[in-house]
Image 1 (cartoon, helix red, strand yellow):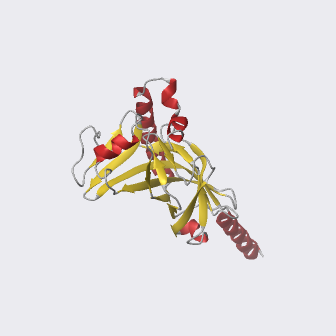
Image 2 (tube, rainbow, N blue to C red):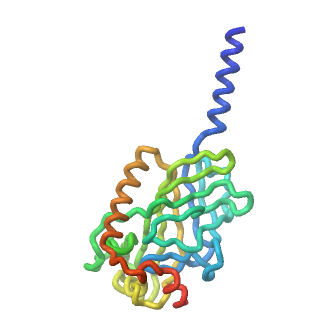
Image 3 (cartoon, rainbow, N blue to C red):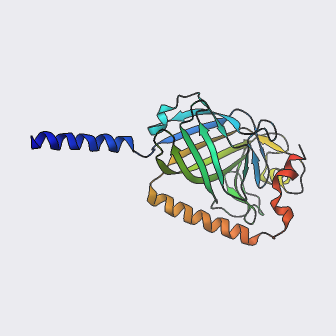
Length: 245
């Protein structure tokens, strides 16, 4: 009788553990429209100010394998890379949402300033005082990348887990095939939008790694904000970019 009771108890504990398991795995996504890039602002498009932007799931494993490849989702229309936070940043799938990714910080790249244009195969940091965009010079264009870190929530059971993400945009077109040309196109003085397709990989990470990641990211954010001039104009990213399009 005691053995039966113990077996039942162990089984119930196992079921409870499975039910409350935190999300694990990797989710790959890509835009269904081009993103519009500014030094401190990314509009994931399409359109201007039309609410969440559409995306498609291109890969998934672990907990995210429950989301079928080809499923659509949404991404917040704007990401202010200067502010570094966004609630309900990525939601998948669009119908009957299961996973919600919030952004808590934008992670800063480890590279020298783009004040000295990089050679082919090298990278530079767009603006240490304003932007975390990491730019890599390729023979046929420029790759722009930035990292995010935050929390993913499984709406099925309310469980959460820390994650990190890497977003990439590729520019390979006339007049935008070098870092200086691309920087000129997205500088605060430029009134032109620079567009590109985009993709991202969001990966759940261990708690210990997240603590280190967020610590480094917050140092980068603090340094960037401390170096900015405290003018009201520097905070009005959206109107300046939107009015130009």
